[in-house]
Image 1 (cartoon, helix red, strand yellow):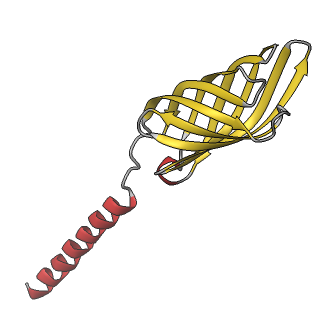
Image 2: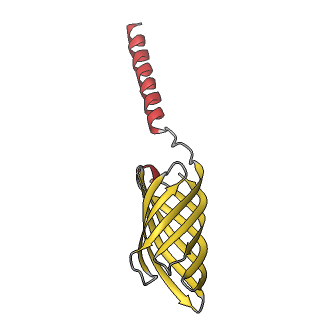
Image 3: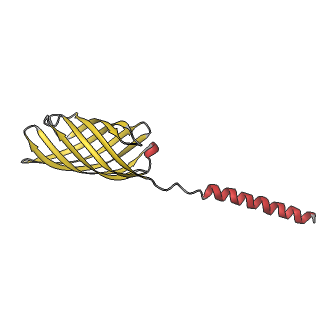
Length: 158
C-alpha cells in the first residue's frame, strides 16, 4: 500500500508539473489588436530649399500613440507641375517607435505643393514592437517646401 501511495504521489506531482509547464509554455500570445489611427503633423524641411532630404516633424496622433516627433528622409522628383515623393519615416512616442515607407504624388504651383498617397508601417520598438499598418496621407505646403502640414489616417495591427 505504501508503494502505491509513493507511486501515486509521483504521478500527481508530475501531472501538476506538466499542467504548470503546459500553462507557461503554451500560454497563447494575445490576439493582434487592430486600431484606427489618425495623426496630424507639422514637418520642417531641414534640406530647404531642396525638396529632397531630411525633415523633422511634430506629431499629434490618436490613442495609443499620442504626441511625438518624426524623422523622415524623402526623395522628391519634379516633372513640370507634377511632384512625386518617396521616403522613409520613424515616429518617436513615449512608449516606443514605429517606422515605414511612404509614396506621394501631387501638384506644384507657385510656392504651394499638394500631395497625397499611402504609407506602410513595417515595424517598431517598445509597445509597438510588432506593429504593421497602412494608411493614407495628405500633405500641403504654402511656402515652397519649407514646412508641411500633413494628415494621416489608417489602420494598424499591434
